[in-house]
Image 1 (cartoon, rainbow, N blue to C red):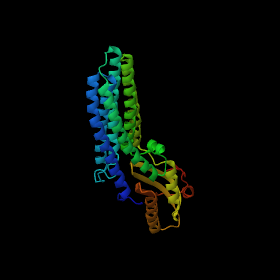
Image 2 (cartoon, rainbow, N blue to C red):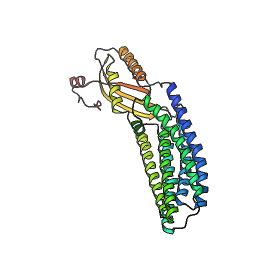
Image 3 (cartoon, helix red, strand yellow):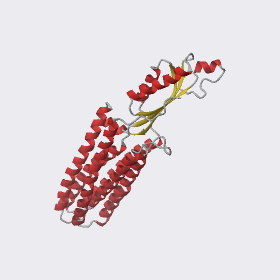
Image 4 (cartoon, one colour):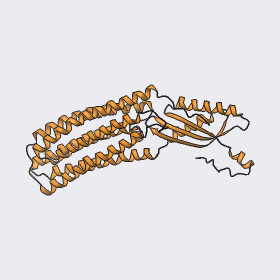
Length: 335
């Protein structure tokens, strides 16, 4: 019993979806041009760090194309074959994107760094590399600014800090762009420092070490993003504070005496499910229980727009079960 109809997307959700697409498109455009420039500069200078940065940008471009696919697939409405919608598709593609970051960027960077340290070939003129690094820093900074601006707006709407939102957000596409652009800026600094030290000392060791550090950085980013997406694919509940507020909203309905069990599940960045075993008043009629379910569902959706589906299961409370000689904890836990 209880509402199972899907809540139509609000203006805020559509706006968030559009912002995510723009953020990813800006990142794709920036990384595609940067990848070509870094590759040319790496070949001209013979710098391992520059080639690692080129691989980094290629991996980021592939990653962001996957994120665009994630945004498109997850926006499809629910249908008979997928009654709960396609929101989780975003996490599948975002997980593949984190694998692309690891394979396409981290593995190449570590390999090239080890090769440079082993062979120690003399580097060429680094002038072009410096120019490319400077331009890339500006472009990556602009892309990062776009992503951070979106996340600040979303954190403000969620009434939390940017740091907390970045750590816990279910919008892993924007999180991926922000983390990858941040890693790109750090990688550019590492490449510049390694190239400069190798140029000054005449030793390619610093360039090789910079390449290794870039690889380690990409491994970390891939691990963080992969872990976030796996957690959401397995099933993440709403935060404890939200679950407590959901329980309070249910108990505010006159006919509801107790919430015996509450289950919440994130199904997408702006989509969640709430299901509860509810003990209704013993004197409530069937019609009163039905309308109580409707009122409870309306209260939850008004306060928490991200809760798109609400399911309420009328369940006897502990006192009723004891009167019938049943175990009060059977089929009605207090989770």
